[in-house]
Length: 115
Image 1: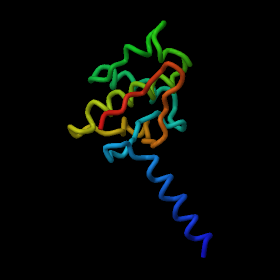
Image 2 (image 1 turned 180 degrees about the vertical axis):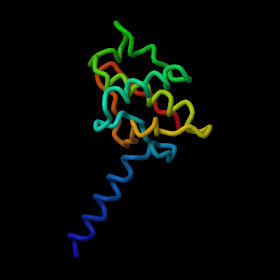
Image 3 (image 1 turned 120 degrees about the vertical axis):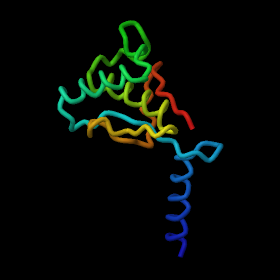
Image 4 (image 1 turned 90 degrees about the vertical axis):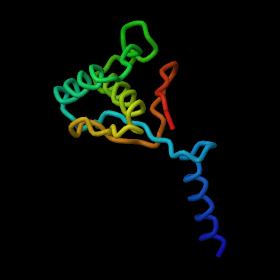
């Protein structure tokens, strides 16, 4: 009997980690690793040209490194998604992106989350 109860408690604890203090589910938008580079490039250019803040993925800014298309696309996709998700925006980008409940921030590069 202890084992099922323990499993339930662990599951509830893990579920709770996905919520912030206000009770909002935390979700970020990142590049899908299976997406071809040319599709990522096109989707990233669209996001940056349509409201994403892509300034932090420029040389000498906090999210420039690692300097990979996947990392830069992830940052731009998330920036767009956070800004527009409450206005009908999605994390689709022509199938180039997916959502995650794991914060993709790393080092000094902070991926924003907007409730």
